Image (cartoon, rainbow, N blue to C red; front, side, top):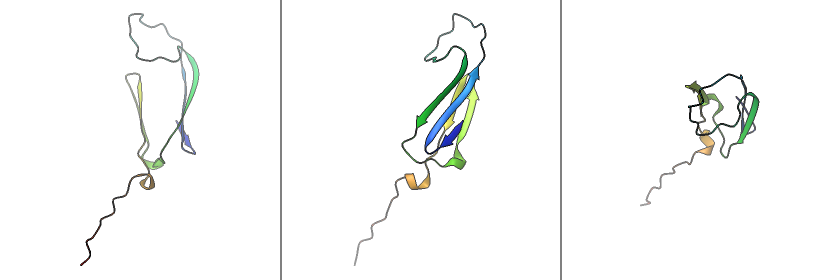
Length: 80
């Protein structure tokens, strides 16, 4: 995984293996070989908080918004 200029890129290689034909897939873009996929992010990301977890064939990437990208609550005080 790489992050540059608000673009997240996922790259890797899937080895060619014989698999069970009875398995069902929600989405499968590549059978085997090298792959690269880039995503343009709409909000700034806090780079120090990015986490990636690969478990049971699923890659989960957590991208927390940077402080300046979050809405800021401004309290309104009633004047006397």
